[in-house]
Amino acid sequence: MEGFGTPVGVKRAGHDRVDCGTYIEKYLSAHVDGELSAAELGDAEEHLAGCVNCRARFAEQRAVKALLRERAEMRRTPPMVRGSILAALDAADAADASSAAGRGRARSAGADRARLFSMRRARVWIPAAMAAVAVFVFVMLHGGAPPKAHAIAPFDLAIDNYKQFVEHFEPNVKSTSPADISDAYMDHQLPGFLWNFEPRGYKLIGGRLDRLHDGSPVSYTFYRGDSGTILCIYMKLHGLQPPAGEIEEFAGHHYYQYKGYSICLSYPPGFICILVSQRQMEQFVQDVVDSAP
Amino acid sequence: MADKSGTGADRRKRFEDEALPHLDALYTMALRLARNADDANDLLQETVLRAYRFFHQFESGTNCRAWMLTILFNNFRNGYRKSSREQPASSTDEFDRKVEGESLRTDPAGSNPEAILSGQAIESEVETALAGLAGEFREAILLVDVEELSYREVSGVLNIPIGTVKSRVSRARAILRDALASFAKERGIIRP
Image (cartoon, rainbow over all chains, first blue to last red):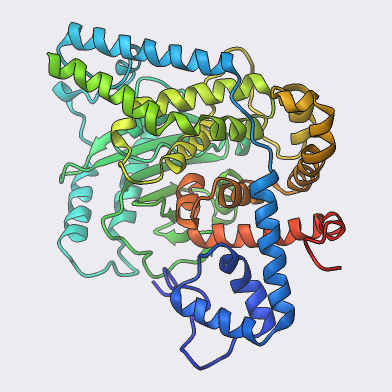
């Protein structure tokens, strides 16, 4: 948990005056962007008041920012493109209207999209791991003790799912196109971003949507390659902080070696993303780094 | 029944009022990502349609441009549906030549000698400097400086932590400062 969410460079007032190196490295750019906290801003201004060089740097960077804002090219959408977009919106409206009339149940999706995904309400396939999900969510929602290094509930859940999916993955998003899977996830209020491990030799097998016992959605995206398999899980944040015991943190990705599996935990805003694999940690980190946005 | 059609028309109107004003910003970003006009058009169309479809998820009062840019970047990375071509350009290196050459001369200023002599020269200087940035730095600085998004919003658009946004912007601006130095000195923007 340490270091997570703690603003960098915050100092107690009146102490540890910021030097030029610190100002330039940690403050300057955020200062220009108006992104410093009140405490940081105080420190930054105090430094600038006494440093003519950094004042000049600040002015320069502000000028660069202004130059970009004014001079980076902005293109007008060609009228034909705009026209075809408006026509596509009309078509979407028409599809909605006809699907509302035809099925009595309007979806915002066009009729063609609606069939891409079905939750199979009649024959719900519940992974055995849902029990573990329930335990995890219970812990998260009811303020249980923070996960200990030797038993991290969400990781156990992720691994249980992973083991099961390696044996048999049954997608319920009826398309293997990343764009369609992304749509289905967004339909269920989950992040639409799909990892692309293709450059690392993994093929996207498919996507699966389920619900946790509290009704919140969870998505499973499964990848298979010659060198192994990766499962990606998205779910709501539920207040989960990075558990202790990580072996590495790089660019917001927290890596864990847990019960013989390699795990990467990250935080798209409002969600958690867990990647699980049996790959050696070193290769796994490379897979993730090469595929990261 | 009247209620239902009213809702649909209302959604369309809200979408046109809140989302479509950002079309040019999205189009420009689509060109930067896709690197040719045809792919950019597909990417833009896919983005707008998807935004329309998920418009009920947009929280009124939040930044609609940031929301649409998030969809644009997601589409781009997920491999948007292209009407006729194969793979999106995934390398970040050979960007501007193509964009400059084949697609971007759609505005009247492009063929106007006066515009070229005044504004366009500066623009190309800035564009050249931007083209020298690695993709992840260019995306971050464009979203902050040109699209005027907050670090938090950029974090959402690019699906990266705020700390990473901060370091990418800082790095990008330092590189741009050096790249634009001689040019900026001539114009007295930065001190020699």
